[in-house]
Length: 127
Image (cartoon, rainbow, N blue to C red; front, side, top):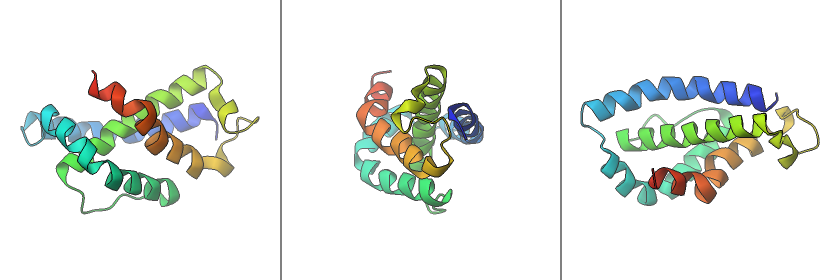
């Protein structure tokens, strides 16, 4: 797997999550302010959930609506950054090779947890 493949896989997942997130927001179940208020409180739990997803590709079934939308936002930012890395040959961050198969868990952890806490969250909060 290379950065383009990873980006494309993340985009597929984001597309599915996007429909659900949009519906919840249209129904007024989840508001932007509620998400912004909840993110710092939910961050540690969602970090753990994202690490589990990176390990085995599954999400817990008992997440709240707000947690699900916050996961969608993280996934969206992860996909955008993966696209940036694909375009700018950012694969050098993890190895000198573009093959990410053996490092997929580490790469997903980086995108969904580390990148989120370093840049994604502040970028989202200021938009």
